[in-house]
Image (cartoon, rainbow, N blue to C red):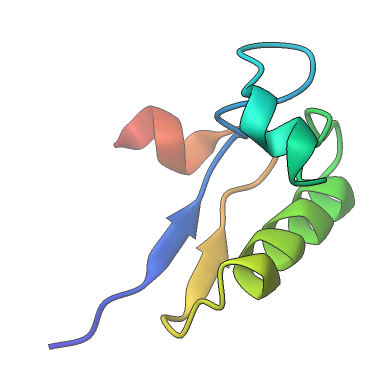
Length: 68
């Protein structure tokens, strides 16, 4: 059985539900507005969390999140 991570819209962007620990840890991010920005944030997330599971990234239109 295989699993993967689906990266969807940012849960705690600076423009929304701010998590103070993200700021203290230097992990605060702005809500991406393009696919390229979302890929960059997802990549940073994968590196910082030392993710081993493959990751796919929802487009900026949030089609995967909406379908789920």
